[in-house]
Image (cartoon, rainbow, N blue to C red; front, side, top):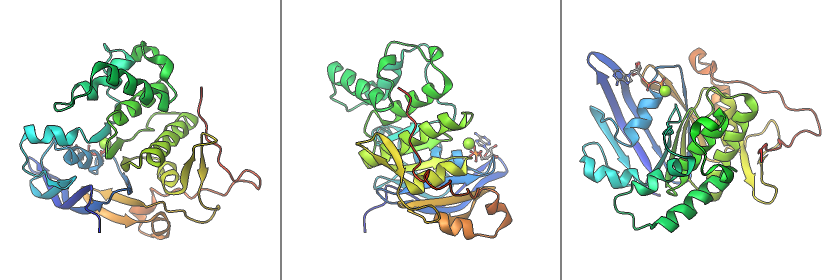
Length: 286
Ligand SMILES: Nc1ncnc2c1ncn2[C@@H]1O[C@H](COP(=O)(O)OP(=O)(O)O)[C@@H](O)[C@H]1O
Ligand SMILES: [Mg+2]
């Protein structure tokens, strides 16, 4: 069996007297997609921060890319972190840097990278083209819409060709069409770069999309990989957090069958579309 990309073993964490994570265990294998659902404050963002050791847990252990990072020194963590792409909840672009500089930041900031300036520029351009924003290189974040800034965040998170991508609420605060665009790009990223993905979201549709949609390179669009009413699965696991505990882990089908009232509130059963509209067309603005 393949070695996990990311593995939590009985992870616990407290702040002062408040226990914010207890007994969390799961492992993400290469090519897996994990969807983290749960109420605000249930510990989703903390799990992502622990994955790249921005925080350290005080119980259990975490392995990232084959290394136990639980007590790894910051200097050793630096190189490992370069293998992980992250889109934080707030997007976190630097206002005073251009879009090109923002996207190039992870490359320039890699310690052991021997990438020269020309290569950096080419990769920045390719990464921005990937999210259809190749024309915004010299703009500043304030000149772009919220949805475009989120796409720049995806370009920045993927510019290093990470083995693992962590997305914290990539669709939060966006209108449904823009949210769909963002999720299409994340599906595309998984399809084309075979990225292992952990995604925090409040929108059930986002998880359903990861579980059922693939990317069609020729038509430049997402498509549903299973008929309506059936589940494609696509190696997607749903994980529900409640007050620092993992209270559900399973497929979309298992999630929808779960009768636990806390878990059920995160499930949105969507009606099948009218005949003829089965294929969900991707929406990618030019
Ligand atoms: N640096 C911190 N100091 C104290 N409490 C924190 C800190 N970071 C997070 N918490 C608490 O831990 C809990 C889980 O936080 P978080 O993982 O951010 O939740 P969410 O599921 O909304 O992402 C919350 O109650 C939050 O207030
Ligand atoms: Mg959060």
